[in-house]
Image 1 (cartoon, protein in one colour):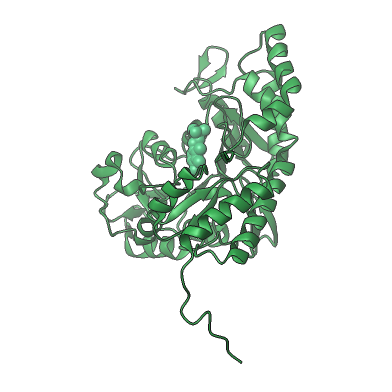
Image 2: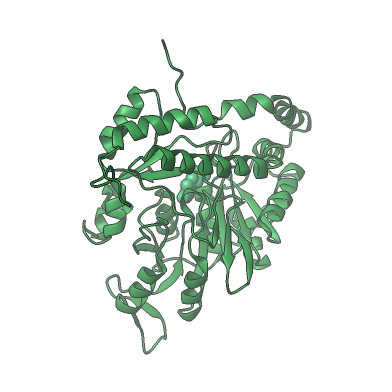
Length: 406
Ligand SMILES: *Cc1c(COP(=O)(O)O)cnc(C)c1O
């Protein structure tokens, strides 16, 4: 008897369902010969701005471009220090380095896996000094001014933005959200007394439409969202060689435009995003119910009362993660690791001199986290199989559990 494999992510089903609309996008591009920028891109930008509840969206070539351009437009540059987390994809810190700044890490919260506001406070108070002459906040270890924070809304759940924004305000730091995994996630802001969408809280935010994201193109794409018209204007110039008008360059920029075929594809797919996100939330709820019923010894994702996540990933923690992962693979269940090696321990960042032991929460979870299959069309039967496979390998005799008490 052969059992079908359970993929980590299923992209083919939705594309098969939308095939006619998607191929029409390609045909229109051939007919009009508008391949980069143009009205199809503008329409998508309007639609995504609306989705994120912000006035401006600027489409770019990738999430990495979006981060880079957002930082530059927000005034981050040469010899600045930008605070972020070590538990993220390297694009977050690449963007910081590539605008000429240096990333410095604060640890994450052990339940949400996102930036811990108390660690941020500790860093600002203990590792920085206000320069009495310039009034600038200086990083003690790097000797350069700290000018920005990049909170990452990892796995589809927003970082705890109220305290992060309050600290940013107090220390005059700009906040650029890395929302590359969080299309549609929401945060209940006490300060604003309402639910706020990912991408609407910082001075600017970066989104990726890499195919595997909650909203994915059929190739590379990204976007910046912002409430600030001046930042939107700067990003529009940055993505197009610093052009103010055709062949008039106010500054040097980049080739970072969104192509029209990807924008057209995204315009078709965005109509389904709410539904797909709801499917992910439903799948997450089923996982939680099934794991609890099975008595599996795994730590489930934590959802604070202030959070409406969109479950880009469903990440659990388990003892003996590596062997569990191997055994699941043998049972035909694909899993992922997000991320196996914290950024400060990567070879690429050896030069930062941040050793093992300095960011203990991130380092601990890196050895325990496991991303289970998660996508909108994941079926209950598939989840049942995943949970049974995990439970069979993690079940531990609970001392005293079998004894009955009055
Ligand atoms: C995907 C991702 C990026 C980069 O996006 P690309 O479109 O691949 O350049 C940045 N940050 C995070 C957290 C991501 O998940």
